Every structure is written in structure tokens, then in C-alpha cells.
Image (cartoon, rainbow over all chains, first blue to last red; front, side, top):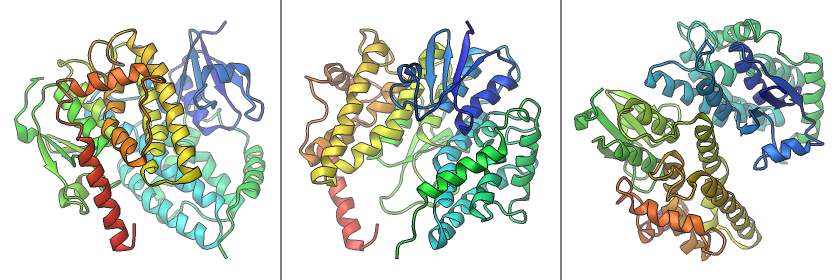
Length: 224
Length: 233
């Protein structure tokens, strides 16, 4: 029985964060795929509060919430390099700040832009781009948010590397403009191709199908 | 690293009603760190705030040796790590830390957002929100029983991360009970938390920081009136 198990779905970007952390640190684990329309009794037992993925099971004890799991992995496998967080408390605080900014602002705003249309979508796009500016600045002089290599904040934003182009294809709208966000686009490409990361991406065509269908059901009609 | 610092080394930008600001102050108190409290004027944002937290333009901001840190739980962890020779805020065991972080995030992501609107909600909407908060309190009671292991606090003998994250909300919890005319913390349903709330507010690091219920009620009325008066939110 594997000491480390990860409950995930084939497409969940939050679960992918954990896959990346485990892969980057070379921790052995077993993947358990969930179907969220038919949740396993194990998932419901291990994450009764949210009933979501990812859940990390370590020596039989479950941990939920992706950023909490990342910190747990970092603290539990201290000897497994690379460290996902820097040593310096201020740098650590910055990494945590950016990760939270991603979850609280960037990802929800991108989602808004995805499920809206017309003028509502335009407004949502403006909000996305206003906030992406901070990331663009943060990337100055750095290959990754973590510096020379993929670290905590990169894992937090990593899903942008594949999902942005999926969203753009499904909506027909540009989310991240090459001229306004050259550093961000370069970062996305670097993250996409990074060792240990590059083999983990869910199949693109499957993602297009999924998000196309999702947009159709969720699309917020413009108020008349 | 010295455990003491001159007051101008550590500043907190904040306001007395904010539970998030209270978190930062309790954490500094736990570590016996002296700091300068720079109160923001309600309804306006100082230049210093806009400069120190340009991304969110919100309080609290901790400024340590001129460097700003925002987001209350990020600040609390920073304080724990910088003043490492003082009493620990997060537990030492990684699993216990994960549990504390999980529930602190729950307070922010689920609990507080359902608590906040109760005071001005009505009818069915209010009932639904109250139900959500009560369910949340039952979960937190369970978490308390597991985490405290019979001691006074989530952190055991001393207040810790989750005590700070959740306890900072007590002023607003009580004010919401008053304004919403609803009982939330209930001896019958959440006896552990009722006892814990008393112990928490009496703790040396917390004393004086949880505002009087009346003061918060007055403040909430002031904000509501201001919003109505200005015609915009």
C-alpha cells in the first residue's frame, strides 16, 4: 500500500498543483482518479467539509485544500529537494501572498471572463488584465516566480500555462495579450515545458471539449 | 535574532473593527513584539496603505524594517517565523499545522462570508445564512474537540494559529447575534466553543483587542448609514 495517495480528477488544476509538487520533489505516490459526478465513499470520508479534490492521504491521514497540501508536503519531506519555499521569512511571505492572490483574484476573475459574454465579458477581461499586471511586474528579471526554477508561486499559477489557451479557444477571446504581457506569456511557455511538469498536462482536446460543454451550460446571459 | 525591536521597526496599518487586523496584533502580542499601530481613517485610505498594499489596498499591512506584508494569515505566519524564539503560533507537527491551516482557510473562505451578511439579511435569505453559520460552528466545535485534546485552546495550553484566525472573529460574531437577533454560539450545540471564546478573550495576548459588542454594533450602523447616504456602495 502506497504511503502517499493523491485523490484527483483528470482535469482539476488544483489537483495538478499537488502532482507537480510531488513530481518536482521526487516523492512516490499513488494517483486515485475521482469522478466528481459520482464521488467515492473514500473522498467523502477524507474531505467531508468540501467533498472536493485534491486530497492527499499520507499514512492514512487526509489533507485537503491545495495550498495547505503544498505547505504540508514542503514541511513533511524536508530532505527532498528542491524546497518549494525559500528560507527567508519575507520571501516566504511573498510566495504565499502571490499564491493567495492567484486564488482570490486572478483565477476567479478569469472564470468570470470565461462564463460571461458581450459587455459583461469585456468588463471582466479588463479586471483580469488589471490584476495580471502585478504578475507581469513580478516576473521582471526572473525566469519563474520562484526565481531560476519552479517554486511555490509558480505551482499556484501553473494552471494558467495550459488553461488560458483552452479558454481563449473556447471563447474566441484573447485573455492574455502578447504585447501587454510578454513576460507572463514567456513564463507560461517555460512552465509548460519545465522538467517534471511537461509530462503532466491533461490532453488538450479533452479539455477543449470539457470547457466548451461547461461554458454552454454556465454561460451568463447579458441582462437585456 | 533579538526578540525585541524598537517600535518604529514594526508597524501595523489597520483599524480597530477589522478582525483581520486583530489577527496581526494578537500574533505580535504572543511574541511580545512592540509595534506602532497606524490607524486608518474609516472611509479613506492613507498614502502609506496604498503604497504598501497596492494590489489589494486593504488592511492589515505589517511593515517590518520598511518591508510591507499583506494578507492577515500570511502576516501571522511571517510573525511566527521571524520571531522564532518566542512562543510558537503554528503547531510543530506538520499534520497539526495542516489541520490548523485548513480550518483557518475555512474561516476565511466559508465561515466569515456567511456570517457577515446576516446582520442586514431578512426572511429566507437570513434563515439560510444562519443555518450555514450554525453548521460551520458545529464543524468548528468538532475541530476544537480534536485539536484541543481537552485543553483550553485549539492550540492546546496556549493560543495558536487557529485560535487567532477564528477568535479574531468573536467581536463580529457577537455583534451579529445582537444585530441579527439570533443566537449563534450556543452552550447546547457548541459547548466547547462557548468556553473557548471566554478563555480566548481573556488571554493576555488578546485582551483589549476584541472590541465591545456595542462598539461594533454602533460602527456597523454608521457604515450602513454612510452607504445609504452616499447612494453608492
